[in-house]
Amino acid sequence: MDHAELTTEQVLKRDIPWETYMTTKLITGTCLQLLRRYDKRSESHRSQLLDDDGPAYVQVFVGILRDIFKEETVEYVLALIDEMLAANPKRARLFHDGTIVDKDIYEPFLRLLWKGNWFIQEKSCKILALIVSARPKPQDGTVANGEASNSKRKITTIDDVLKGLVEWLCAQLKKPSHPSRGIPTAVNCLATLLKEPVVRSSFVQLDGVKLLVPLISPASTQQSIQLLYETCLCIWLLSYYEPAIEYLATSRTLPRLIEVVKSSTKEKVVRVVVLTLRNLLSKGTFGAQMVDLGLPQMVQSLKAQAWSDEDLLEGLNQLEEGLKDNIKKLSSFDKYKQEVLLGHLDWSPMHKDPIFWRENVTNFEENDFQILRVLITILDTSSDPRALAVACFDISQFVQQHPAGRIIVTDLKAKERVMKLMNHENAEVTKNALLCIQRLFLGAKYASFLQA
Image (cartoon, rainbow, N blue to C red; front, side, top):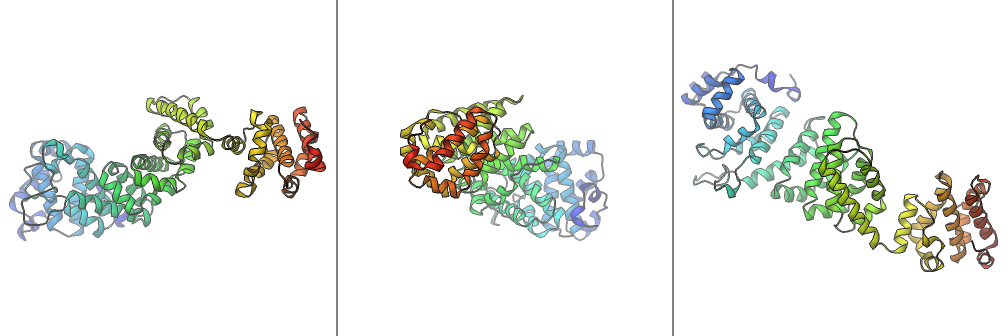
């Protein structure tokens, strides 16, 4: 059978020759007794054995993985551990029990990450992540297995484990060992481990952030929604870490997060994205970029929806306040740009303010006349009469105030679009379209006589 498609249930149907292993001294007589009591028994029976003598069983399992290399047996023991932890994840604490003689509990799993087939890799990754997360922290007054020992043999330290795990996870994101399960397994594991400072720094050093960014995209199926949620959870955890924030600022992370929040209806996805945006809001130029990308309007529409999650509602309120503060800091031309880029044109005071136009007309030259081009596009695409009227008026202002305004606007094919609007059903649109055409035909010299 293809190892990539093996299941725990299929593996546990095997009969492992434990007696032979004892005869060849690969396991002890005590090990054999414990295995006979445990193997092929009901879940309730195994559960009782683990409650009574859990560390002894953990010691047996880790010992087999360290000393026996036969693939079928390694898969079997990993399946036993996986089953034991799936029934009760808190059993991961058993690996850190002070009575375990072999302190190097991590080494077999770390080795198997790179040596085994997909079943072995996936189970080793999952088990390692659980054991690492369950270790007692130093403030508990205990030392986790794998932390230190008086033994002469080199122990695999927790930092070795975390760095080794991150290397394997980044390798999966780059080139998955399994076509459909490699990336989800890696992201699921990272969503647990990125709480660890060592994992964050190793992940950023290995350029892991750029491997996550492409996974931030709208999802529809149940599996892809879960992958998206866990990816966004990773980005949220990274949003607390300055070196990661620097990378997020120079990648397409922000537009992707906003695209996800715009199209997602899954509350947990929206919540984790909103909380990430809230964290990033005050960092670098993120606030200004969020305003550029139309987040203020999006927050308004999100607030209008019936969410039940209190963290999400609080996050939306904090995001709204933070964005308002950012907009206040923008210069008048920045505010004008926001209006145009969002297509939400209205008769705000700056449109008819001669000083605004005199001071800012050269700013229209930025990015190859981007703002002017967007105004001209609005004439084609908008169905809002107010936006059409304001766009016509602003183009006429540009023609009047810019020394080459008439030539530039003509080259950008605006004249034809404005002329179409002279027959518009709305009087405000036709009035401003007419003014724009007159200024285009007369040029700046005479256009100053035509004040709106």
